[in-house]
Length: 121
Image (cartoon, rainbow, N blue to C red; front, top):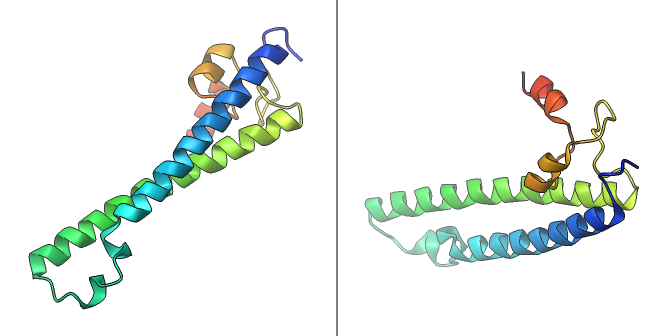
């Protein structure tokens, strides 16, 4: 493993990822509780049209937020898996070491900047 990717650094990243995962899972639960459609009486409340529209927009917004958080959850779980397999910090495309600064900013990063840019094209 590269000198920069010390056991101490990887352990701190693992701790950070686990903490982030716990926080995100709690956010998802909170959002689900705030979803206007989670109210069992929603379907039969005979609300005014403008209320229905507001509830639909609120539901759609929450669904979008949950989708983004689920994607982040999957990325974090994948990073934790790479830590367990001793592959953390190496680009999954080219195999080079991902710069430490990138891992500090995005601890779940799976690609170096060059490969990430190519994938986005």
